[in-house]
Image (tube, rainbow, N blue to C red; front, side, top):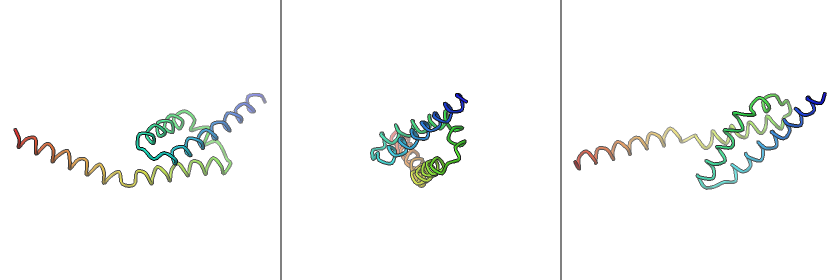
Length: 100
């Protein structure tokens, strides 16, 4: 019984930590700060994913859905940006080759 109580308490702490990290990520404006918080999110998900998925309450599910929608919104233009980056690299290499 002691283990179950401890496990439930740990799961609650983990859920609260995720909510705080997600809130912090939403508040950050600079890319470097967002990357730092994303590092926290990545580590927490790798380590505590079973605890979050095991929760049946709507609060945990809502937190995960918020993370998912925020990450989708932030990465929606990623394909276009990567394509542009590739084109710029090709143009730079072309200019370098012409200069030599």
